[in-house]
Amino acid sequence: MTVQTLVLRHGRIEQRVCFAAVDAVPSEEFLSGSEKEQLAGYKFAAKKKDFLLGRLAAKRALGALLPEPDLRRIEIGAGDHGEPLVRHPQAGSTEVTLSHSHGVAVALAYAAAYPMGIDLETISAVSAGTIIGELGTSAPEQAWLAAAGVDDATACCVLWTAREALGKALKVGLNRPLGELALTDIRAVGEGNWVGRYLNYPQCQCLSQAHGDRVLSLAMPVEAELGAWPRLK
Ligand SMILES: CC(C)(COP(=O)(O)OP(=O)(O)OC[C@H]1O[C@@H](n2cnc3c(N)ncnc32)[C@H](O)[C@@H]1OP(=O)(O)O)[C@@H](O)C(=O)NCCC(=O)NCCS
Image 1 (cartoon, protein in one colour):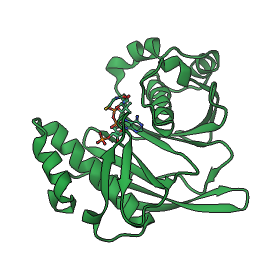
Image 2 (cartoon, helix red, strand yellow):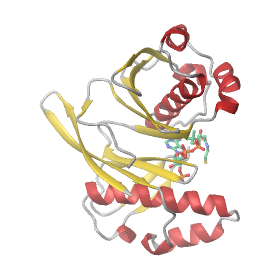
Image 3 (tube, helix red, strand yellow):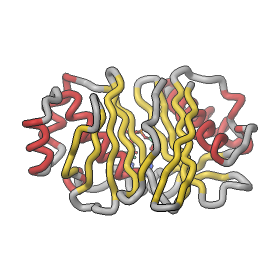
Image 4 (cartoon, protein in one colour):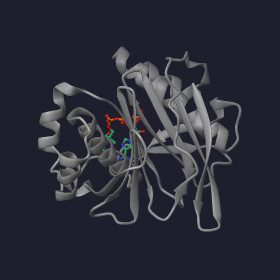
């Protein structure tokens, strides 16, 4: 489990953003009563596991930001499009974004004035070719794929997670043509780290990072800077 406080800067404004990563399925005692009922309603073990991992990551990130040591007092519901809704007496405009992939969940708690989205995926060489074909890649993305020296599986994961992170920041998920969420101006900023802009959403930028066999992407306002990259471990 990792909990990290990052500083988001916009001009002279500084906001704390809290990141959490959870890689071991917890027992349910950190859930509220209604969340325990929700958990009991899931039929499949994989869904239960994702729910526990995702809720713990989200509550640890929120618990650090609010701050609230008793995670049972923080509840996370869902909005009309599946977006997480934070319930806590001191939540104010605090929001959370979360993702789970193959036994790991990550979350970012942030102030709504600076909308953020997060996505974590496991790199899969098997599906890379198909997915790249289906992404509706933009010309700048194709140029990056050809020149960046990144293997197809990782590149596919960067492009995919960048779209999903933006869909979450916009609260629409992937409920729209994928090509609409395409990137432009993708730059490497160190080994395994990329920064990109969005072709149709110039107000947002993407930070993507390869961590072993996973890629983590964040979408956030273009005018803001994050003091450090989130750490999975
Ligand atoms: C967002 C989405 C792409 C995530 O898919 P995924 O790759 O399977 O899952 P991830 O693990 O990366 O992310 C899942 C989390 O994204 C969040 N999420 C779901 N929909 C979201 C949305 N519209 N906006 C922001 N975040 C969203 C949820 O917190 C979810 O976790 P939870 O279900 O445990 O609360 C997908 O759920 C989607 O496209 N949803 C929108 C479609 C829609 O409108 N559905 C109606 C739901 S009632």
